[in-house]
Every structure is written in C-alpha cells, then in structure tokens.
Image (cartoon, rainbow, N blue to C red; front, side, top):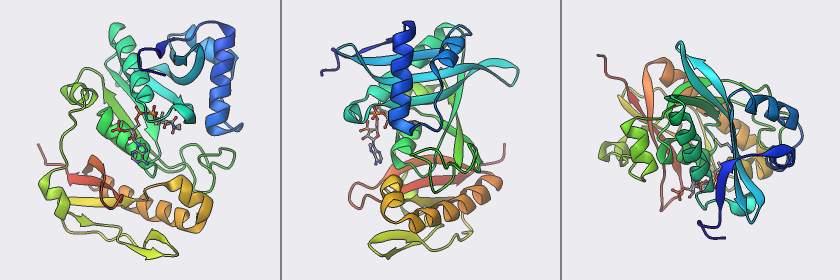
Length: 276
Ligand SMILES: CC(C)(COP(=O)(O)OP(=O)(O)OC[C@H]1O[C@@H](n2cnc3c(N)ncnc32)[C@H](O)[C@@H]1OP(=O)(O)O)[C@@H](O)C(=O)NCCC(=O)NCCS
C-alpha cells in the first residue's frame, strides 16, 4: 500500500459503520464499542466520522462529537484507531489532519480528547506529532477498565488534552517541526527514580524535587509490561499518578515527551508555569 493508494474520507452507508464497529472490536475488545446506530445518530448530529481505506477496506478511523468548550462550539474526539497491520505509516496522523481540516471548515477551533499517560506511543503521537497540550489528569476516567483489552489491570487514568486547531504550535507539529527537547531537559531531575528488577525498569517512589523543570519517566511499552509483569505495570500507574497529580496540582505544565533513541527510556518534561 502506498500513501497515494490510501483514501481518507468520511464514512458512508451502514456497511461502513459496521466496519467501524469491527475495527473498534479488534482494537479494544467487546467491552466498550460505539454501536453502528450511535455512529449514525452522531453523524446526523455534526460528528466527524472518517476512515482510512486500503483497497476499499477500512484500516483506520477517527470519530468525534460536537462539544461546547467555554461557551464556544468545539469538538470531543472520542476514538482513533488504526489496524495493527497498518500502524506506523502515518495513517493516524492523516486521519487527525482530515479531522482538523473538517472542523476548521465549519469554524471549530478547538478539539479535546484523552489518552493514557502510560502509553508511550500515544504520548509521542499526541504531544509531538499533533501538538496537543495536556489540560488535566483524571483518575480512572472510564472506570476500573476491566472489560477493555487495552485498559485491563491498571485502570483508566487519562490525560485530557486540547488541540488548538489553528495555532502555530499545531501547524508546526503537523509539519514535523515540534520544538526540540530543550538542552536543560537532559539534566532535569527524574521524580520517579526507577530501578532494574526482574528484567524490567520499575519506579521506586515519587520524590518532590525542588526544581522548576522535572522529568517523569514512563515504561517504553506498558502493554507488554501488563502481559508479562502486571505488578510492575500497576506500580508504574501508582507512581506516575502520584507524580502527575502532584506536579500539575502545583502549576507545572507537561511540555514535551521524549523516547531516548539510545536507551529507549521515555520521559515527559514538566515545567513550572511562570506567573503572568
Ligand atoms: C495511536 C494510533 C491511532 C496511531 O496510529 P498510526 O497510524 O500508527 O500513527 P502514525 O504512524 O501517524 O504515528 C505513530 C507514531 O508513534 C511512533 N511510535 C510507535 N510506537 C511507539 C512507541 N512504542 N513509543 C513511542 N512512539 C512510538 C511512531 O514511530 C510514529 O511516530 P513518527 O511519525 O514520529 O515515527 C494507533 O497506534 C492505534 O490504533 N492504537 C490503538 C488505539 C489507541 O490507542 N487509540 C488512541 C489514540 S490517542
């Protein structure tokens, strides 16, 4: 499949809605799926529901609902999924770009959604590739997560992010020009110091460092950890939850995310907001 062969467009007709349900089932399992009838109702009510088609087959989809943010019409993006066989080929990025263009055409300037702070891939995708900004940290937003194959075992803590569709930050990120990892980031304290245990890197505790710039580490592959070392995965949740709640509560903002090319270790960079 070349990039040219892939078609990105709004979903049409009942069969494509059913294909979207199937994609959700494959991605998240049976516990939490938006049914075709609700996708249809949402489409009729101003939702964005678009798919990526490879030789006519649905291989990715994005779905979001009209919303009201600060008394303005906005967008709540509920779901983005790309079939496993088609990941890391920028299909997710193209779906989000399509969503953005559709929203900008209708005068919407802001979209929001959530992602799990422990998912390194989603952190890179949302913060670096899309230029979204973290607004808040919510504990177990979708419940304890028992029914869902991606969420099971560690609950459903989420970052809530906002995407300022016509901002310079977003334009630059989409053009592949996200701001570089600043030189002072390299020496920023890691607040959840981790140690090697049973072949995995596990955080020991969360220290409140007296600094304006700190790093919070996350595992490189939380799903793999959940499968093979569930206690370590739960520990990561516990420790990062404490760190994010503490630092965001004290006015820090999540500035960047980085996966170190040499060590594969993954860090968020948090900076103390300067008072205006
Ligand atoms: C998130 C998802 C939609 C991305 O789709 P995609 O088509 O693979 O996305 P893209 O190819 O545009 O971008 C993926 C990026 O993540 C990077 N990536 C992949 N695995 C990674 C990892 N373990 N750690 C960090 N980054 C990773 C890729 O290299 C790529 O970045 P690059 O463009 O800088 O190379 C897809 O992985 C998916 O369906 N995941 C399951 C559902 C889900 O989590 N949805 C919620 C999204 S918020």
